[in-house]
Length: 254
Image 1 (tube, rainbow, N blue to C red):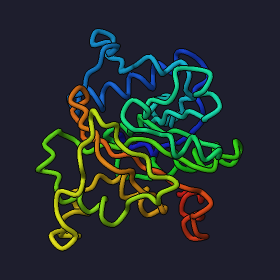
Image 2: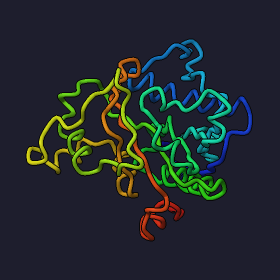
Image 3: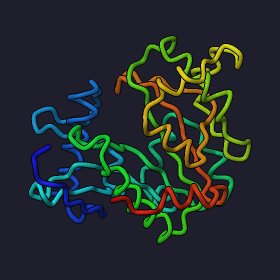
Image 4: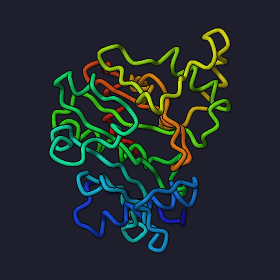
């Protein structure tokens, strides 16, 4: 990062140009950095995009100190809009019947990433504050979406996957399940075999953050060979967040 202190602004993308900027950052992270790909990825223009993009709100984090550069993104789909468009992206990996049958106001989260220069800074908290505002404004009750481990070697992920299954499995009313044709069991080790310290250390920061906010995981993982990831489905019930978790989620950070 340059010497100038970041000047963050987090808001929804306002036009096609800002959506392309979000897709450009997604390309740098998910394709160039992590080795992902997809049928609509544009390698010439360096854009990571898919057929769902036109139906989503794109939450962007801008650094005004770097000429308005987009340095963070989230992709957001309210449940009522999913029913009118292409549906939820997550539904391609998980059976979302328990969430849909709940009748509660849903929000799918996805494609969350930060430019490498901003990881470990206050950037993510600015995105989360804007996300919290969006949740409140839209009366969202349940948030969900896939989060990823890098790579597709499930045996190498036995510790964190087993840890999530045994200690953070969603309650039955919210327990989505990986689709049968792609189901990868997560309880690769018994609870006694799980080394919690090692498992937590091997868990991506975003997943750990959702767990701290009271989030759960669905049953089973999805191995996404196209995107070079192993996905879990995270679910968070805003009604079950305690006061401390709500404060962490919504309080602005310096």
